[in-house]
Length: 120
Image 1 (spheres, rainbow, N blue to C red):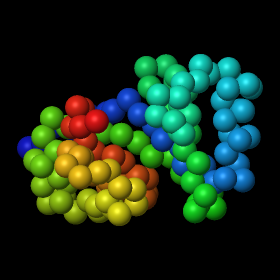
Image 2: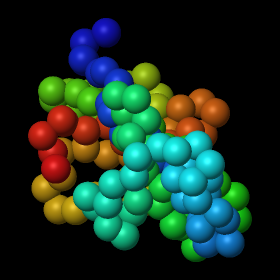
Image 3: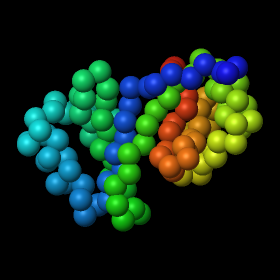
Image 4: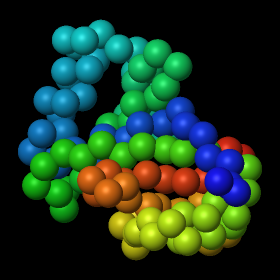
């Protein structure tokens, strides 16, 4: 493999509006994870060394889990993934002009953000 890709620290759970508050309460009140709001309106929870973000997604009918991957060279990783036939899906959520990253899906349609660690 000619591109370095490693696991990231962020896990996003996209939750429909009708399940959002109950999902937040589950992780905060029942499981007891420590919440944080560094990127409001999203609410995050400490999940060991990872961060679990709960995002309200009114356009969705069921929850999805999205994962993060890091690469020191997004352009090189994007080329590697393209050559391997990996599907890009950048239209699912804008990342902003000049952001050094993008969205892909795995063969089971799980969304992954691939980005340079200092892209934000």
